[in-house]
Amino acid sequence: MNEVDKLHETLRKLQEPKGYYFNKDREMVNNLLAGLLENKKRHGYMCCPCRLSSGDRAKIRTSSVHACIVFWM
Image (tube, rainbow, N blue to C red):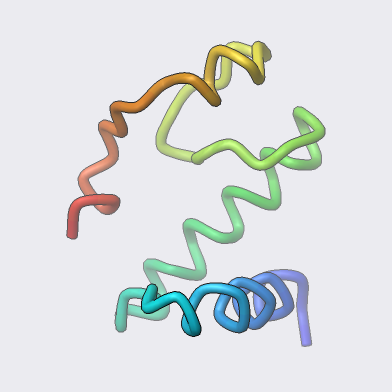
């Protein structure tokens, strides 16, 4: 099992009991998860790959608007 699959399984186990499910397009989901993992390596935390990271984690955390079209699908 690779890093993306491990993250997918971890998040699935945490979120499904709360009623949240991954999009059925596994390729798209895997691309987003891979981006999260890459940003964790770069910045030390997972930030959405659709956004440019400012390096200011507090600023990202307080942003309530998510511009990523995939987020709204």
